[in-house]
Length: 395
Image (cartoon, rainbow, N blue to C red):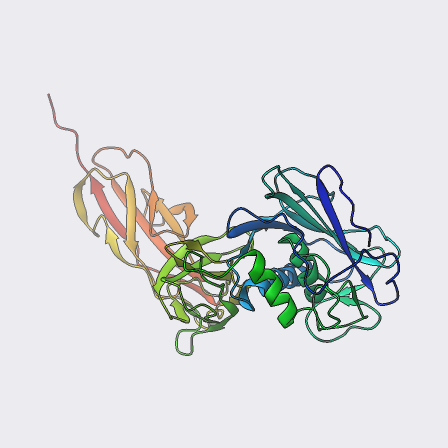
C-alpha cells in the first residue's frame, strides 16, 4: 500500500479489508497530480487467467474501465484497443492490463503509471495478482474471491490519476471485502474526484454505449441478426457498428444517426457466429467501445434452390469468356462447379462466390458445365449447360 516513485512512476494497490496498516495519510478523494493529456486513452488487455474464461475476463475489464465515463460527467474515455501478450509492468508506451500468477500478500491488484515533466501520464499498467486471489465475473458464484469488475474499477481510478480516499463507501477506498460488488458503482466522492481532474465540457467524445445484445431476426433467422444497446450519451452525433467472425478482428459495417439503439444486419451466412461492438462518436472523437456481443444465425432447414442464370447463356456460341458465372441460389453457402468437354463434366472446384475461372479454352469446342448449390441441410444441382467457344478465323 506504500506510494513510491519508480522510474518516475506511481504505484498504487488495492488490498482486502484486513490490511489497513502502513497507509499514507489520506483525505477524502485524492488527485495524485499527473493526468492524461487527452480525453481518450487506449488500453490493451491480456485476459489469460486461472479462474474464468478469457472472454469473461475481457468483458469484466471493459465494464470496469467504462465506469468512469458512464457514471460521471468527466471528460475522460478509456477505450479498449485490443489484445496484448504483455505480462510485465513496463514503461513501453502501451497501457496494458494483465493477470499475473504471482501473489503479493493481501494485495489484490496494483496500478503503475509513469508521467513526464509536464505532469502528464504517459504510460499505465494494471496487474491482477491471480496467484493470490480467485477472480470471478458478473454478479454470482463468488465465494472467498474477488470480482474483476469491482477490483478493476478501483485500479482504473488510479490509471486516470486518482489516489485513495478515506470515504469508506468510495470505490477509491484502499481496501475491499471478499466478493464485494460495491466497487463497480461510483460513490459521489469518486465522481467528484474524477470530475475535478477531467472537468466536464463540450469538447469531449460521447459516453460509450453499453448492454449490447444480439438475437436472431424473427422472420429471417438464418440470414439476419438484430442488435440493440443502451445509449449512455447525450452528445453523440451517431453510432458506428463493427462486426467480426472471430471475436478479435473487427471491421465497420454501419454508421447510424444519433439516439439510434438498434440495427439489423442482413445478408449473413446461415449457421455462422458473428461478433459485434458499437461505439458512439461526435466531433470530438469516438467513445470507448461497448461490450462485445455475439450470436449465431440459424442453420438452414432445407437445401438451397437450384442454380440458374448461367453466363455464358446455355447454348451460346462464339464465346471467348474464361470465367463462368450464375445467379445466387437462395440458401446456398457454397457451390461445386463441374466443367468439361463431355456431357458429364468433371469436378472443377468449390467456391462461395457465384463465378469461377475456367482458364483459356480451345477454339470451336463445345463445353459443358453444371453447378451444385450447397448448405448444411443438403445439395441441389442445376441443369447441365453448354456453350461453344469462338472458332479461330483464317488469315
